[in-house]
Structure formats: structure tokens, C-alpha cells
Image (cartoon, rainbow, N blue to C red; front, top):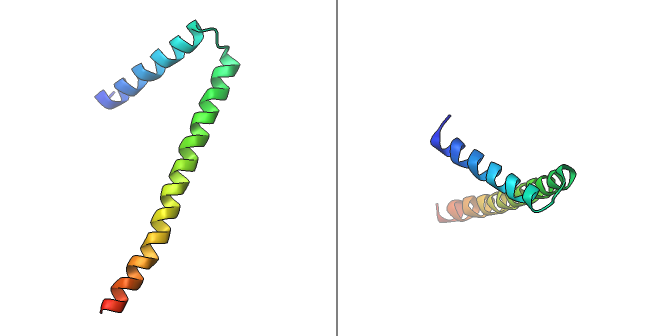
Length: 66
């Protein structure tokens, strides 16, 4: 396992253990994980949307200069 994956796994395990120690149930942790995934998905969609919007403008400017 790569060092990066090990670090991610350690962080996840630590976060999970802290949540459990704070009294969160497995169902609540699944809900939290789902919310995190939703946030990441929305962030990726936003980045993709910005890239898609920027690409045609860049091409348009390039064509006008030519």
C-alpha cells in the first residue's frame, strides 16, 4: 500500500474512532460519510462546469486572434 493510501486510511480510521468515542452511531457515521461524498461530488461538478465554461471562451478568443 502506498504511503498516500496509508495516510488516508489512518486519517479515516482516526476520524471514525473519534466519532465513535463521541457517541455517534454507525448509522450517523454513514450519514456523515454520505454528506461528505455529496459535498465532494458537488465540488467536482462545479470545477467541471467552470472548466467547460472557460474552454469555449478560450477557444473563441484564440480563434479571434488568429
